[in-house]
Amino acid sequence: MLNIASHRINTEKTTKKLASFISREIKRSGLNGALVAVSGGIDSAVALVLTVRALGPERVRALTLPERDITPARDIADVMSLVSSLGVTCDTVEITPVMSVMRETLPLYDPEDLVAFGNVKARVRMIIAYHYANSLGYMVIGTSNRTEWLTGYFTKYGDGGVDLMPLADLYKNQIRQLAVHLDIPESIIEKAPSGGLWPGQTDEGELGLDYDTLDLILSGMEGGMSEDEIAVELNVDIALVRGVFRRVKANEHKRRIPTVLRLRTDSE
Figure 1: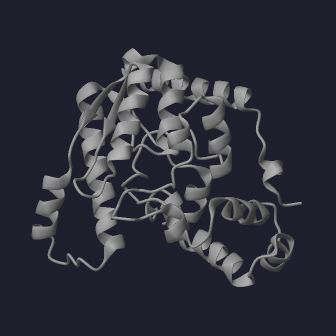
Figure 2 (figure 1 turned 180 degrees about the vertical axis):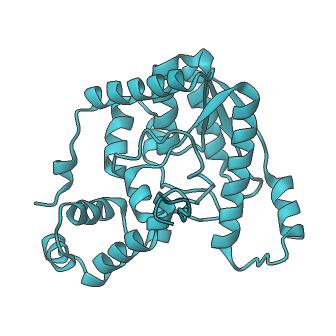
C-alpha cells in the first residue's frame, strides 16, 4: 500500500550509517576534509549537519553562493545561523558579477529561457565549490535526495557535480524525518524547497506536483507497480503518473557516467 507512513526510517540508525559513510569515504580519498555548498534549504542543511557529525567542524567548510535580487535574505540568515550553531567556517561568494558576465558573453543567452540559464547558474556554483575543494584538499559533498535523483531534478555537472551523494537513497519525505531528528531549525524544514535559480522558483512548482505525492509515485514505480495501478491507489490523474514515469526514463542519462564506445576488443 502506498502511503507516507511506509517511508518511515530509523533516523538514529540512518544518521550513524550516513556519518560513517562520509567519514569512510573521506579517509579512503586521502583528502583533508569536506566542503558543503549550503543554500538555506533542508537538503543542504541535513548534508552539512551529517558531515560535521562525521568529521568534526574543523574539517568541514561551508560555502554559500547567493545572487543579488534572487536569493532571499531569509535563506542567507538561515545559513549563517546554522553554520554558527555548528561552529563551521562559512565562505560567502556573491555570484551576481559572474552571472552578469555570462549574460553578456553567452551567444545563445535568452532571458526568457529560465531553465537553460538556471543550469548555467548551477554550473557556476559547481565551479566555485570545486575551486574551494581543490584549494583546501577537500571532497565536495552533494545534497541531492532520491526523489531528485530519480526524476533528474538536478543540473548535470551543476549540483549533480559532486564527489559524494550521501542523501541520494532517501526520498524527500525521509530527508524531512532526518531533519527533525538532527534538530534542523523549523525555519529551514518548513521552507518551500527551491534551487534559487530565478525569482519565485520552487521545486514543486517546476515539478508540477507536491513532493509527498511524487515520493509515493516513485515508490510504486520502484516496487514494480504499473502507471494505472499507482493512479488508482493514490487517486490521482493517470496523466500525472505517466509524466513522472516519462521524466524518470528521459533523465536516465543524468544518472550515468558518460557512455564510452569500447574499441579495443580481442575480437577485432
